[in-house]
Length: 383
Ligand SMILES: *Cc1c(COP(=O)(O)O)cnc(C)c1O
Image 1: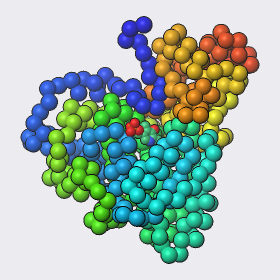
Image 2 (image 1 turned 60 degrees about the vertical axis):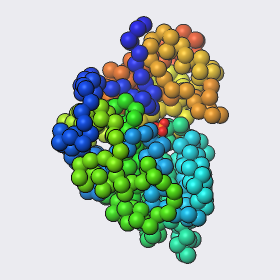
Image 3 (image 1 turned 180 degrees about the horizontal axis):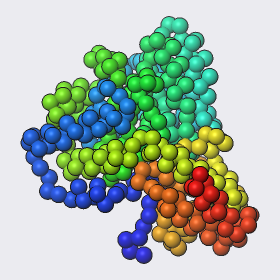
């Protein structure tokens, strides 16, 4: 049905009317006082979201640009880095680091499993020569719906003494607690189409003082993504290049909504939606893909045993206008993913679970009592 599509994918995520309306204005000059005021306010809002007193810079691009910028601004030619890889995005940071000729050591975990913090501790303790310059990992691994233990891994990096922690928080920021300063994270990359409740187009890089210090001597090639330029401009409430002006309107509105809701309430909502999605799937006999206890608050990956996940996903889209995400790479057809990130309310999750349940029942694959998924989901939402 026209105009009825509900996005339940991990990006782009649904955008509130308030944010769409904020965007739908004429652009203003990016060197004007009015725009400077917006840059000033959004910079403060971004620090609030990251729970940091350090600078957060905004670039025009997707989340990958933020992570690439983070990597190339704090590292130098030939540096050794330790990358965590337990899914599609972990894999991507290995490729980015390799593209810049870094010496990449990889700590892997099977897809669906979390990274083992002990493996990081062991590798970092063994590095008495202090060759490892950074540990790069994904907090919420969107491809598998697994949340990695960033807090513990960051603590091991701090014990190492010199390595930096570079974290992809694209689907954890705005979904669960990511206190950048308290956890001692040096670089956090994120993108507007995820927890920010915005359309795609803006990328954010938050850097600690240690990371900005490293940026001064970093010699990897960069021009557009030279973050020192962005920091210098930001200090004058400006941008080095033409920013996506209308997306800044959206950013101010979206972050304003997030501030009105409050971080604790936002995190509680995402935790509740994770519990509700998991309970609903389990009650209708569908297996969760992420290891128990390690599910992401932003996304639930489901591995239906006796049916092609793409068939189920397409049916839900055709019948109910709800878009779920498919599996990536070797998980295609094996897994579908329910995004519950950003502007998502209890009704959205309950409806998605009901639509999936109706489809599973129709296909004759429901192994629980009819309606058991919805009942379990509703119970979880009620707390
Ligand atoms: C979406 C996403 C990204 C960024 O992808 P882009 O398409 O470049 O915005 C990075 N990491 C994770 C974990 C993601 O979910």
